[in-house]
Image 1: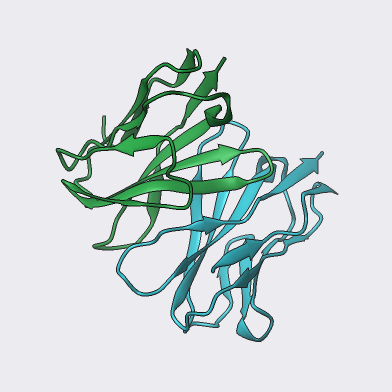
Image 2: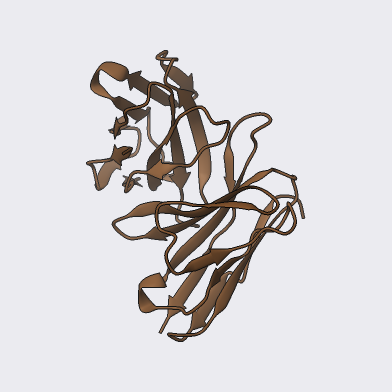
Length: 116
Length: 113
């Protein structure tokens, strides 16, 4: 069965610090997809990234970067120079198989608090 | 309005009552999903649908019923609400023709007393 573990329940940083959110997954499939979503205090879920199991290249988008390592079954998310607006709950999620759609298994989330 | 909407946004109901949560999307995405979010559990998949009249169970389907008579609507019904179904419910649709991103609705906060 698929499983996603976000061991960090809550992280507190001061603005401009870099912060890494950890995500470890379990799956028996060779084809799978990994996702990150952001849930700000307003409650909506915002898609950040989707990565397939065959693409281990790191991804960078502005201050956000993702490190995918199949050897350790990890898909970690780093925010560089954090800002107060980054305060949110961040979810890592996994979808197994290549069925053309995603039945997401979410981790329990990491709450990030960025103080001024 | 374009996008995905849910109604009501807040609902309080009593144990044993039937309640239906509505979800509507304007993109004509074929796939739609219902999740519940509870503290300590993250989001868990309740049901999903591949198209009108095609639905399937997710991780936590017990106590819920879904239907999909039209592509744009995917209502979730609690036939006899229980306190354990107090949660925030999110509907989502997926763009399987392009980004494979799941777009989430704003959520419905349901309290069962």
